[in-house]
Image 1 (spheres, rainbow, N blue to C red):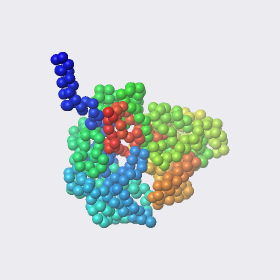
Image 2 (tube, rainbow, N blue to C red):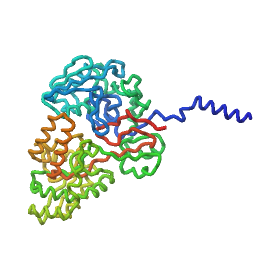
Image 3 (cartoon, helix red, strand yellow):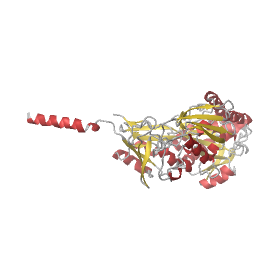
Image 4 (spheres, helix red, strand yellow):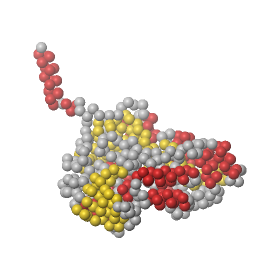
Length: 492
């Protein structure tokens, strides 16, 4: 009887003092490969800055969601003038920065004027080039007037480079970031980790996590041991070659998503014989995407048929436009007067997807009569020879900027592509804010690029995430550079 009472007393004590043992945990350690150079998204191009701070510490007028959609953020709503040049933002009220100061329209004007100023150090200053002036109407209303309509303006305002900062703390954000987000900065142990904690005065839905530590792990070989030991619970960007070691372990989730990295076989469209449509189409038919994806991205890349990420809400699946067909490729070369094939060069920059993919593509084109000389180049050479001087036949590169389909309309761009019909679609897109119309135009743009076989569309660079199976809310895809923790929680 005495033993039973002892057990009962211990159980009551455990229930009274140790219920947290049965509750979901509220801390998280996330592994990231690169340490940011500083912590101010408005003053640096490094993706690692946004991967820690975007949506967590800093917020903008708008924000980009997990599917690449534009969502309200510090602006709860907006109206657009009939001429598409004036945006009037209704701001959220009761918002405070982490140092306790109030957020209002003056902070928006300061941030946008600072980003577009002549002495701006913003890495994406071009995002603000269309702004003519910013007027404060009242503390909760700001009016932005553009020099010309810009259909992507609301999207641009959702970039990490466009987050809103306070004039009182803007100059010290590199070391001590002060934002309005659901997490506030606690500590930066240089070379080791950056720690965020839950903000107690957040204007929106509070975060489920009380603490998040971004642990810097530059060595990919350390990823699996860190997961297995429990030291780190999530790697949003995992090493693709290490996936096999954890994919069958029920303790972890392996999530394969998309990035904004369209990986393409770039073609110099004005250089004979690539100026002939039949030749470019023959190349597209010669490409076996599955073999390329297996060899260049550990089988994890998603095939693409035009220049848009499969994760984008406006993506059109055109991968069936050019099925792998050697006979069709040879037929098109014959139509182009090249029945006996021809020789060309393939300049390959350093990334593995290019060097490995290049070997496969050279073999596939050889099967249809195109004999490629592979020329490895360093990035500096690639930028000089290929990107700047357009001194190339073919090359392989991944274009990682979001929503960059307009690059094909740039007359000085290294593709050397010129199609007035495509240019017209892009011009209309730039003047259009209506989402349904933009979707229609983006669909047209993708189809034109596929029909013209401007480049060989290969695959989207994969986003490989591995994390604890009980963890919920991390992004599957990467429409922008972010590890958004606002919806992340542990299941019970």
